[in-house]
Length: 308
Image (tube, rainbow, N blue to C red):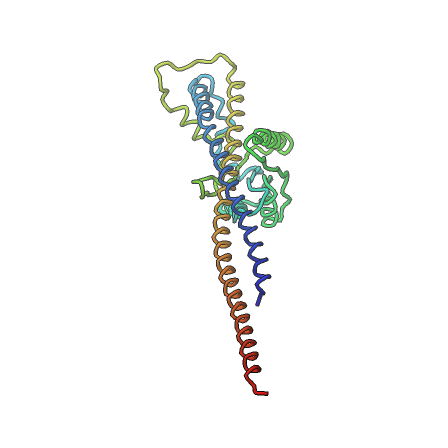
């Protein structure tokens, strides 16, 4: 059984841990809001890009050949070519099963389609998910990207990923790219999702083409179709990657917030137990001291009452 001094030291240690957990909880809440705002800020930009694509695709006489590169379904690509996979995780721990969930979802996605892992070129965003993927597949996961410390650093990281995709296309002829990341559902929940980044989704392009324009006059363009379409495609890729970063980081902090809330409850329960044990120990110590005093007093009074 611990002494009262040992219990006091343990209580101070747990209170220090509680302070750290509260700080991490507050930081996670602030970070969630930061990345949620980044996702919201993309909405108007993303809509503008889609409107640009819609304008271009509605000019039928320009786009008769544009389906050549996009007329295969995802399944046909899975059967015929190597696939580039980019999985978003975390660099830091204390976020529950965040990395394990997205890694497991990625592997099960390709297992369901009976696609060999040897045909996957996997890149990891975050050291923690890198370790989870490497352990699960036995493959060499490369490259490894670090995560930005704030929303201001996401643009630079997106550019790094885009350069890697260009290298995959030019050096390894990898033209099918998938993104896997945790998507935020609320301030405290998330779920893994998959996005086919390349080739562009044919069904989505056709929906844009067939969608009615909101005004009577359709805007015209004078640029070369391929140049304009390529420029819009690059912006679409940028927005998709930026959104993946922001959604993943928001989800990471949501997971960390949930973990810290659970840790805070456990710490509070532990503190209550330690304080109760300390009070019990202190009361026992006081009682023993009082008994010692009473016994000494009784022995003293008895010795004085003995006749000489």
